[in-house]
Image 1 (cartoon, rainbow, N blue to C red):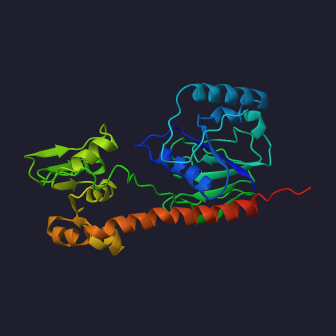
Image 2 (cartoon, helix red, strand yellow):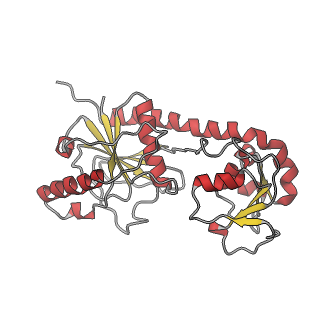
Image 3 (cartoon, rainbow, N blue to C red):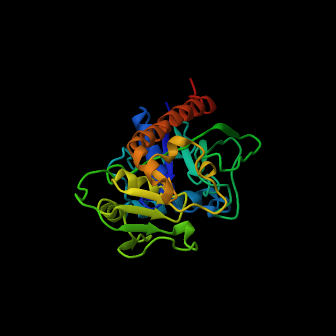
Length: 311
């Protein structure tokens, strides 16, 4: 069976792309396959340099990254590839997994999977892929991309991970008081709650710092209707309120009833949120476990698209 090399940025709890890339590596290893992370660098030069220059640049940049610290998640089974990169070139033993931001095939891999965490070209302004690749989208929000000789999978490779080791009921306050609030995507919206004894949660706070606040306040108020922090607050035992968007109903906000467990869409929904808060953890665990099924489907497709060569 083929091994996997995942081009990934260093683990960063505030970077969704880094989190899901490291989580994919973990899930592949947990599924019984052999998968490694390889420090990502931006490689548009790979489309214009000759192959010897590309190989030398990759070897130099990757070794520099490996000599420096390359953080991973200690809770994941996600080893870093530290062998000679020349082994990967044109080898049928490996499948390289690139995010959509990477141009070309910097590892000169024979087998390439392109994982669209966003629309191709959205972040870089250009697209430079090759025929013979297998494409996966992270979510249905990403547009399908087609190239002659490559295949777009009909299945999503949606990898969810919730930091439940941080957001939980451990060491919660016996008596709660005050509120916390967050703007982020809703930062221009008017404040509708009392700011007395209210903490603003900003981007510079770590997960550990935010969880500690959730474990002692009474109510979390989000002016961003789509942030995961609304659920994470509930896991820490506090009330969670989303300030409704004008013209957006509760059903439009979250069509799946179970996804609203523990989270009030407006202060008037708090009684319902309190009554359903105990259902949220199981719902989130189920969503997280679906990633394993997505990886199983991915493996069936990669094994069929890149069959092992027999003598």
